[in-house]
Structure formats: C-alpha cells, structure tokens
Image (cartoon, rainbow, N blue to C red):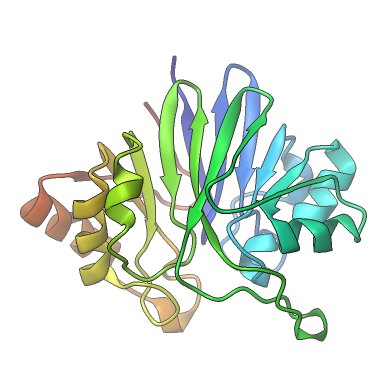
Length: 227
C-alpha cells in the first residue's frame, strides 16, 4: 500500500491513499505560496495542529462543503463546531479514527490562538497519522523537546518538521528533533512563506544527512512524494 503526500505550502499537506484524501492545516486563502484552492480539496478528514490562522486556514469552509470532520484538540474543535463545521474534539494521547485511517494527538510546544477577538482555544498538538499503511508524524509548530523520542517509538515512516525558526524550531534544532524521532524520511515545512521565516531548506537537508544519515525530501510547493 502506498500513500502520496502533497505539499500545499507553508504547513498544509494533502495525503492520498486508496482514493481517499486527508488534509492537514489547510492554510490556502491568504497564503502567498498556496498550491491549491479550498474548492480543489475533497477530504474525508481535516486534521489540525493548533488554532493559529496559518493552520486553521480554510478548514471550516472545507468541512461545511464536504462534510469532512475537523479533528483537533478539544477547545479548538468545540470552537470550530460553533462556526458550523463538523468536528471531532479530542485531546493529547487520544486516537481518533476516520475513514481510512487514524490520528493520535501528541504534545507540541507552541502557542494556540485565533485572531477573532484574539481567542486562545486550547493547546497545540502534533499528529501521528496512520493512513495508507504508513505512520506519519506532522509536528505542527513546535520547538525541540525531549519527549520527541517517545513519539519516535511510534515507528515513523515519515516526519514533517518545521524549520523556519523565529516561531518554531530552526534548522539546527530540527536536526536534533529528527535524531530523536528516527523516521525513514523527513519533509521540512513552515519556512520561506514570510521573510521572518526564510531559511535554506537544502542546507538543512544536507546537514541532516551528514549528521543523522536520514533522507530529507525538500518538496517544492505543489510537489508530491509517494512511498
């Protein structure tokens, strides 16, 4: 069984397997580097890491149009349900099944707020996604933390990690994170969308191979990898 991972820009991804699609952090409208429009996506589930606008993005509109549930931490899920979205509000340590797979919510170290009246609905999460016969970790926005070693015990085929610095860990700490996570493949995200998070992703990939011997695939916006 294979899964295709498409980079939609910033921290947004679309996963495809067996005719089903899962969308993660669909920040498309207002994203200067978006590779898709909200109406292009028809997911069976929408997975969110936290409440910041550049991650919630178009999730409510997509959910309303497709009926796909938004799976998020409890406060964020409850908040988005009040906007008319279909949601499943879970929390850290919990596993939620969806059509074709599951997601386990794990801790992340970041903040979580929404610009409407500057609400702060809940806490951020990482996502351990099992879909298409693969186990994938989407770190969301986070700094480096030691318990990533426990996440690595999930047996990761893929880890998607932020490298943009300033708001998240930068390249040096991302290399340390990957050493703890021990995935087969790494994809970097959350970089170069805005000037403050501009970094050299290819330099990160070379550093990761040199120091950890782990393959890093730097996807151009709109590009996919299948494995």
